[in-house]
Amino acid sequence: MKVLRGSLLLATLLLTWMNLPAYGQESEPLSDNSALHVFLDCQGGAWHCDFDHVRREIKWVNWVRDRKDAQVHLLVTAQGTGGGGSSYTLDFIGLGELDAETDSISYLSDPDDTQTEVRDKLTQTFAVGLVRYVASTPLAQQLQVSYEESSEQAAQAGQEEDPWNLWVYRVSANGSFNSEALQKGRSFSWFVSANRTSDRLKFNVSTSGWSSRDEFEIDGENLVSTQESYNTNFLSVWSLSDHWSMGLVAGANHSSFSNIDLAMIGGPVAEFSVFPYHESTRKTLTFQYSVESVSNEYATITLTGETEEVLTRHRLVAALDIQQPWGGVFGQVAGTQYFHDSSTHRVDTSLGANVRVFRGLDFNISGGFSRIQDQFFLSAEGLTPEDILLRRGQRETDSRYHFRMGFSYRFGSKLANVVNPRMSRGFRSFY
Image (tube, rainbow, N blue to C red):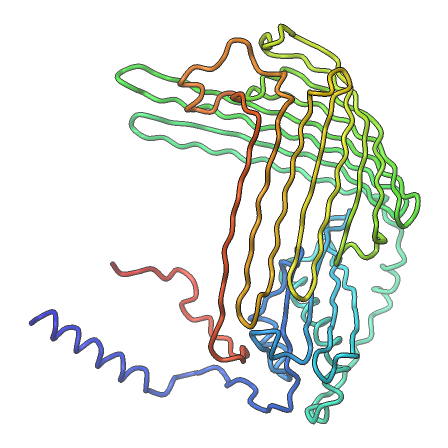
């Protein structure tokens, strides 16, 4: 009875509370159906689309939750630039009676901009692009256009020579430590890179490392597991045309997991893009071919009795990435074959899609399969059960696959104009 009375009391309080007028309530959604209906769709690396902020700043349109209800589909895609910023492409796609009205605007963020600055400038660009569509609605009479003239200093700064000559450097390091009564561990990783990107030449060099040590006490005995991996990569690419590129790749690698004491690789690579490179924010289909020489020194003798060897291989990669209003598709097929033995090869495939099936329903699926016939680096010493459980070394296999699928469904009010961030973070169940 106490539980029943408590439940009835709680329900009464909730119903009373829900009917009380809200203090400091956010403004209601724009209810005028004559206002432009816009669907915001951020894809392909456009991580700075803050929907809450956009709705707060651009209140003169109706932001809808489904593309089917929109008059304008605002599709935002982005790619990273060589300097560390992002190049955003904003496609304004008219729907229904505005079907013939399409537009595209580009926005380039500065690598030194904060997330807030990028968010604000991106939102401002949204507003600029939407003006032409709102101009044909009754709300156009309520809009005001203003212009902020840049200062003379800003104009001169834009003409200054770059003292870094387009070079961008990055340095990062991370460490962790954990301890319990019967086990403890630590790890450390670092990364250094230097990049220079221009229209004619792209140059990247990076080096990174990772190491870990874990100690376990089992039945009074100490068990220690260590792993380490170090990599250095070099890439230089020349732009030949809007469809062709030529380059050189090189690298060095050390991996205790793969029985590699030192591996060095280098060779030429060519790439053909079916679509022009300037359309890469929306669609890419590329074919890449390389011939590489590989020199391996192994930590322990391999299954074939080698401690070191020099091999030559070639590699073909086909990659697809499409971002469209109906969703996106991506896929890749990469094949590697060694010249000394045609049966020594590897094929990696991956495919995924995110598709709007119908109003409110999005379906996503991805998967991949690898055929592995190039594990000549496996140690002849084999792996103990402890090595396998602690993932100290690579096990022999001829295939690997993964698969993932899911869906999301939205229903309810089609308008999405109100922003109420109260208790949006840190909420937890009381039980």
